[in-house]
Length: 456
Image: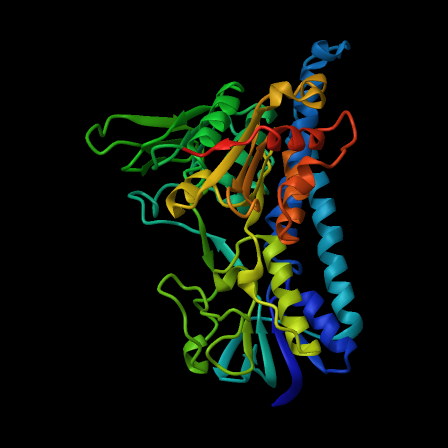
């Protein structure tokens, strides 16, 4: 058995920086990776999808040339093989960079890690041990038990990224963040796209006005949307597939050539031997952790998607920051100090921070709301992107910002000006009185805050 000071299992967004920092402090660190370095974000998530979204936006903007005063001769068509090749080059560079950086400071071990005891790991017949073990194994696309799931071909976010033949008709099952990004992307590439969602509206976790605005934007690009599809089932074979939608009308189906399942994520914890280590899991497979990301087994931490405390690259990286600060510098950082923040990378994007309007109403606290349509934002309409709106919620008594939704041009960037003030626990007047640069989208956040109204 080979002993290390620390073992890191998985190389997502938390594991590599933690491993490098621990090694920099003089620890002997082993990093175990069974497949691709960089985890979901680098290989099948943020990096590849945003690379392809950038291609989709370029195609879309080129087709709008006459609106901006120029013309392009001939039909503008997406070359999916070239788009995927560009994406693959970007991914390879990122993944190789992670692997290279780890090899400089750590012992890198290739293979599947399984616990054989609380601090013992077996990898391809090799036995390892460490007093400190960090689990950063990420997650994968969920495959729910829809009727037909075992006999009908379908794609996930990972396999769709490798497709180099444009689907004639892509049916997206799931109207949340992943599904909507792919739906708009492939519609702009030239596919016919239909979204099937079991809830009564897409983006069911967002406020209804956000969901309605997003649906209007997507339908404006000829994407067909079917919410309220309670009894989803898959039928067909090859390039002749169908998705059933209703319980009472079995004949109501959508026929297409490809099906994308975008219905959630499952943590990669089922084959780690966690039971042999005595590590507790939740009913849906996440590793239980406390506010400091410690498991119930002393000396074992779980970071990133596998702990169920955040499903984003930025929350995973923050997990690393919390653990490293607490272990190496005696810090007292906690997961619950984190403010919820994320983005939907459709076009225009949605930037979110803090509570939704529905959550504020449910809390019963006295609040105010400021709202402004993007068509009133000069930077948005001169850029040809007037869709969406911004709204900010403020505690009526403390004047602290409770949350914000910025759906519109550069909304994914603009929301950070609000998020920073929330972390500073400063009153909304800090932004309201700030003098922002013109013409920008950010300059209208003070305008929205200057016209707060009671949330009734």
